[in-house]
Image (cartoon, rainbow, N blue to C red; front, side, top):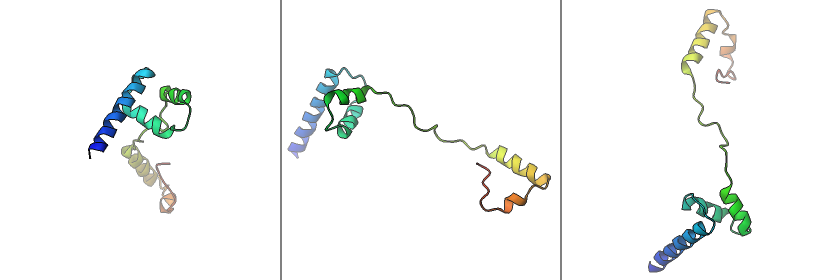
Length: 94
């Protein structure tokens, strides 16, 4: 039990030293994540990846406008364009 505590404290201190060595302003969790993925890379490669800015890979959660879908379906029913509604592959969200 004490060994785990000492290992955790040593790891924390080493991460703080690394953070000050590379003048990183972000959280320690970022350093930990980069260390675990780049353990066998060179130090310069690690620092380069640590400072790399990542853009979001998705546009976030897509909001569905249910009212617009309802209005479009209602319009199709009123003008008798309902043949496609029996098709099971029809998806109004696409």
